[in-house]
Image (cartoon, rainbow, N blue to C red; front, side, top):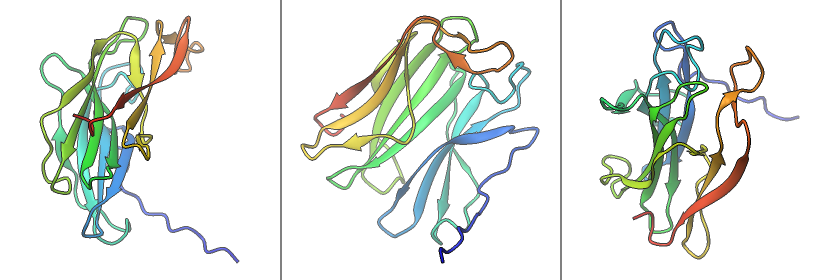
Length: 196
């Protein structure tokens, strides 16, 4: 007979933070788990917890295999010309370092061209500190990434999936999901120098 899964809440939605999500995790050398996730803030947008809402990236740690978690600590907040920190991804590299990839939304308004940058940085000390971010792409109105799918191939090449979209519009009136109006093409960025 299968063992039923254990379910443990990491965060619950509230009026102040109507959505938590976009999380990724990596196991650290001491056996603890490092989590980086999006923390969506209350806003006056029609879709208050939607992709266009303001958000930070926050960290949490678990030392008991994910049964309990530390309080969250702000890792990254948008700057003056940015609206949301988004889609974190973590990957343990073959050399032992940890790669972090994330996006920063400069402009994300439904039915208007968006502006998104993507960055990568490295940690050599088990997520205690990270290097200065390096741009994967900058202020694109067509590119957006995905979450939890960074890969390092046997050759050492790091592969980062992405999507090239032409335009944004509501998929169905009132649904609140964004979809390309013309074309959406899947692709990848890659690095042969460990994300530098």
